[in-house]
Image (cartoon, rainbow, N blue to C red):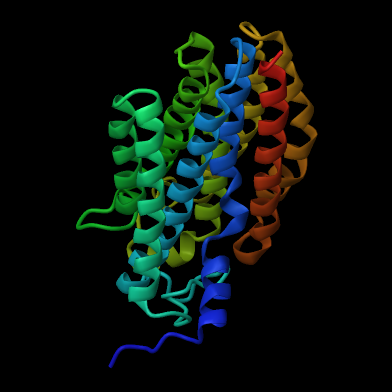
Length: 296
């Protein structure tokens, strides 16, 4: 017999938590930076930029629900250290969480269709690929998140695709600086996933989920986190070759010190949660500074 869903208000609260608001900077930052790049190139198409933000947020939320659903039905989330998952924790029926994922991706598809009609039809391909990547992270017969490829896809879709695509829809043109600016944004998105997967190494190993952290092992994963976190912020200097104001991004460097310190001190399990939260804060602050800097 399937589990009954809680009353509607309780379901809404659980779904709001299951959207994982702390991960949403990974969706907001690339669009903000893209809009800043467009402003620096001569102006921002506000409607298109707003639609790009809807697409990015809906894909991230849909991916979170899809991850919760797929890991839950596979049993991967049993005994996890972090916040309780909706399916794996028995909080909501799997069909409810799957429906939330489908609904989120449908919102992304609708907003993506609108922005493609206003700009270029090729964006439909980028949007479809992004939605597929969101579902297949832990879904499908061979989820790439279980093969150590999660960080690669995060860098591509929440770095290169999201920043370059947002800059294009907000300005109507491609510029070389868009690609350069996408690199540090992508690296900080990767940092968020790396510290999350570092925390989950023991549980993922038991469940047979071979994330990059599991493949590399504890020590190398910590080194990777430091490299992508500090390196991501430092690459503001590369963007400054095109837009000198991008050096503002370096002001976020002090925010990297505490999470890097926590990771380097070999914190494990729940003790890594503060580093995860601080990484999200760093990503948001860096994104805001870089967006302002490249708009000059």
